[in-house]
Length: 401
Image (cartoon, rainbow, N blue to C red):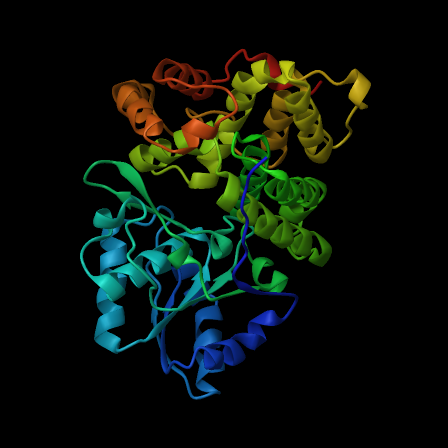
C-alpha cells in the first residue's frame, strides 16, 4: 500500500479563538487586509468586529461582503479589483464556503493576473499566492483546510474547480462561537455537506489509512451532534463537535477526494442555483443506493455499517445490518433536518429538469470525483440517478428500517 499525506497548516480551534486574529495577522508581517465575507455577517456586526480587532494591532482593513451562495466569476473579479484598489497585502476569508472559495480565487488573480477560468483544474497555479487567514462560520465545507476553490461560471452554467496546494490558507481559525448564529436551514445544509465529505472520502477508491481515520472520526462527531445542533445552534457541545467534524472531513477529502454526490451536485447548483449542501443531501440517498452493489466486498460492507452506526439515531447491530438500511437512514435524516426530499421539492420544474438533464450529466462526468466513486459510473448511470432524485413520489423510503 502506497500513499502520502501532509497537513501543512496552522490550525487554531476553540471557543473565543476569533480574538487571536490580530496575533495571527501580525505574524504574517503584512499591513492591510481585505476581508472577504457575506452580507449576513456584515449585517450582524461580525465583519466590523474583525476590522476593529486588527486595527488594535495597527493593521488596516477593507471589506468585500457581496459573496453569494454559489459564488460567481464576476464576484471573484469584483473582489480582486477591490483588493488591488485598496492596497491590501493579505486576505481574511470570513464566512461559509462561498467567501472562502472567493478568497482563494482572488488570491490567485491578484498574484498572477488573468481570469479565474484560466486556472481551472489542477496544476495551473504557478506558485505561492498572497497569504490568507480562513475563519469559517459554518460547519460546513471544510474549505479552510482544502486546496480547492469552486466558482460558478454562469456563461456555461458550470461550477469550475481550481485545485492547488498553494491555495491552503496560512492559518485556519475555528471558533465554535461563530456558528451559533447560523439559521437552522443553513446549519442543516452545511452540516449534511460536511457529513457527505466524510462519507464519500471514506468509501472513495482513493481512501488510505490516514484519510479513513479522519473520515470516520468526522462521521462519528457529526452523526452524534447534527440533530441537536440544527435544533439549537447555541448548544456549545454540539457546535464544537460539528465544527471539528467539518474540519476532519475537509482534511480527509483533500487527500481522498469525494464521489458521485459531489460530481452530480455541482451541475444542479450551476443550472438551478440550488444551495450546494441541499443539492448534495437530495442526491445522497440515491447515490448510496447505487453504490450498494460494492458491498459484496466485505471491506465496503464494513464501511457501510460504520457510516450507518454513526448517522442512525438507533442503529441495529452489525449482524442484523443490510446495506439498504444506510440509504433509507440518510433519506430519513434529510427529513428530520427539514431538507427537501427531492429536486422537484427544491423548486426545479420538470420542464427545466428535462431540458437540462443531458448537459448536467455531461458536466458531472467531467468531475474527477466520478473516477474515485466506489462503483464505476457512466453517463447513463448519472442520468438514472438524477431521474430517481428528481421525485421521491411513491418511494419506499418514507419510513426508516
